[in-house]
Length: 99
Image (cartoon, rainbow, N blue to C red; front, side, top):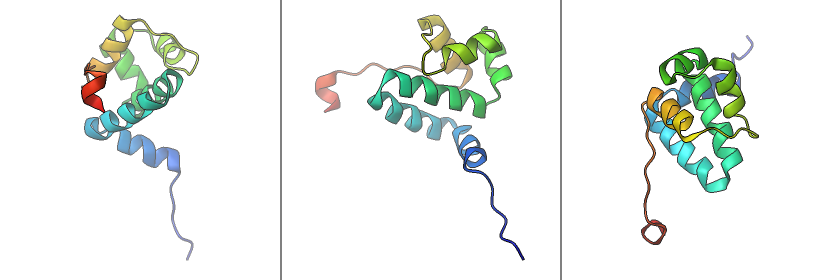
């Protein structure tokens, strides 16, 4: 009997729909680069249904895909709107205290 497996992408999107896991994933990606962070945020948005995130953030879905690509350049309003739709927020800490 063949072993049933599922795709890594499906597994990843399921996990990224959890706000706690998404927050850890995004924080880790932000340590890499802005491009990696935007790509990661796009994956989290996809995990939470991009059209739903777009509607809740007040941004058109196509614009959201473009903004969250590795070459994207979202405005602060777009970024905070998307994070809010995902039940996440931006937090600023001192670089000295962050280690």
